[in-house]
Image 1 (cartoon, one colour):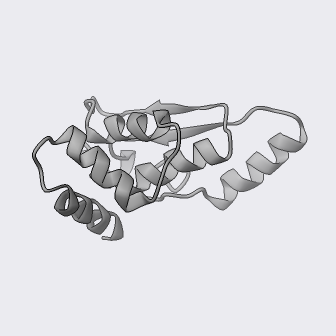
Image 2 (image 1 turned 180 degrees about the vertical axis):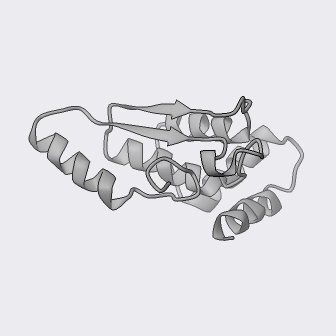
Length: 127
């Protein structure tokens, strides 16, 4: 489950080893990510752990991956998770996690308590 799930910000040891081998072969690298929930927890529309999504987007940017295959399962809808990944991935540069989560929260939930929303997202990931 750690290979694709947002419950693990990763990257996993398996991904690191595969990436190292691919780079030695001159191959481009893409990641497979699941932004809603997991097959193992398919009864909820998404897991609100935006901090982990930030980490995944940051890893793709810093390591110059060629792209990603994002997937959804069980009819999950577009949510804050997919919006957050796009937001983080398309920013020219990323600052600290808490700061970026607060900026995203302010844009996605206008008028919200962005610090409170960010604290909740971080707590969900910890849980």
